[in-house]
Length: 203
Image 1: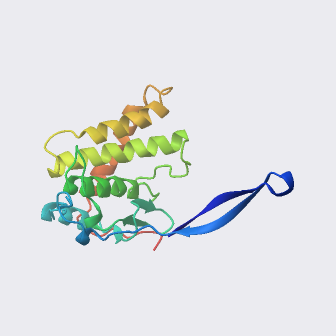
Image 2: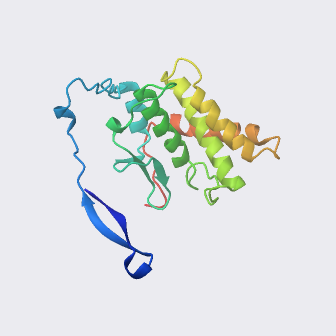
């Protein structure tokens, strides 16, 4: 139900007074089950669990919390937050599995930035060069890991678009991509070495 106003006009004693009245209008709403022939569209394909990739991620001992609708790394908590797997539906350039795992590997690369890991600058705010550099590092790290772990058989368009965006922010720095690639390589090497627990000085 929604509300509207209707104007009425009075010409008594030659006046031209306009008044507004509030009235209710009911609008029928149907459940999809009540509509014959409704095309509900294709059923979403669930994220396929990749045991080798899940094993690799588990060995890092990163704390991963599945809740909410945002993917992010929270440095103060040293936690990666991810939406539930079923929230990933894929796109024209990614399957649901590629979307889920590449997002998680992006955040896992951010996870390596703390001082007792790879010691990168996480102080930058959105729009700053420091923020753009860390995003480049994380996306390159995700791309390297996707290739290493066999998640995508060829370079994905969304990786390229994401990288192009942050390179544009850093267009004044001609060495930005080389610096980011070097830092991403360090992050990937760190993750690959995580076969045994490493005691955190923050614990």
